[in-house]
Image (cartoon, rainbow, N blue to C red):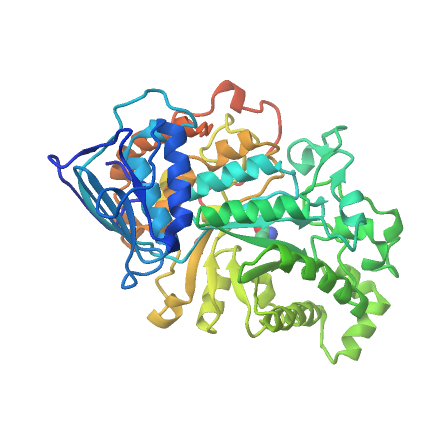
Length: 536
Ligand code: ACM
């Protein structure tokens, strides 16, 4: 049973297999109706078996056990009876995912390859996650990803028991969420005239306009689809930097006394734009208006407000920004950024939500309720955890999956550090120097997929997989804390079966021997960083 991520424990019972047939039933209490519905629709599509509702005590049965944690479950398979006992709806869904895996790779197809021969192997299995936040970021701002591909990615996350989809919805290069009171954000800021081909220094552009946006109903659909698969969608509205697209649509949001913001377009470069928000009250009101609509779409406890990479030059040059610093009694531009983040920390808390931001939000003082996505290494996360803040560890040196997977020229648009499958498998989210209390503040970990050099789901498949499978095991399974003690060879053995699952799902992962010819991008310049990533 090549389960990825590995369960807490499992015992194979060779004489206890349960062959499924047209009379096999599927039953659940009302509290687990979501997992029941998902399991029936997935397995009915893949096997052709009806799995009609039946009686308790037979067939495939989902049960609730309040003594278990919400995401934990037990699975027992005996002839004629397979039982998933879960602590809550999410645990039931994870148990259902495991049950599907036990039926083999063909259980991941959308239509049956054969009418019979579906056998659940006899097993006693207990399982539950190490971390409550097991995330992946999709950057749909640099390159828009059509809704159908986002839904497909949700299926992939759920199949790996990853439970957070962090959607990076806004950036210098595009605004992807419909905001009804500000139609310019999608009329103007959702597309760009052209893009750079490869890294900035190559100076190469195509002249193909691209873009797109999600309507509010599209996003509600994504949120509901994800919820049915035990995945929470955390939206990111990045501010006060990474906002050129918004400024291009509404020039009054920019630093109008230092730059002609009316002449700006959606940025056609990669990188970090200097065209950031002005820090006025009017701008705060504008983004409160944005967030009011965002909160209506996304029920997640956490709302990500970015806060990363906000160049301060315009604020230094702007008389209005300097007057604002004096008016607020602040001492510098970092504190101005902190003031903005604190404002929204309070604003979100008043509405029963929590702010999460990139580790730059530590600069100038961390807002009282804020959680931190530690991306520039571990240090921001360590400081935040030691100060009693929740932390999601996603250091770029380890789990930025847009970074290349192997050295050499054949990796498509090679950027960043070489992070092999094995490197990701040996990534440890909780740094050893945290004491027990601070370590508990690491609520989870996340792999990030930035899309400057990925313009389609096929590209995302290539960069994400199979590394996201290794990451899922890091996030879910109780692997040894010492990365050197992890059984990567054992993981690789289980991966062979897992790749058959990915094949059945139609995921175009990177083959172990390197890219297929159609996965290469000869001549497109990247930005490889040589040598091992710095110690963090
Ligand atoms: C980031 O990579 N700027 C969060």
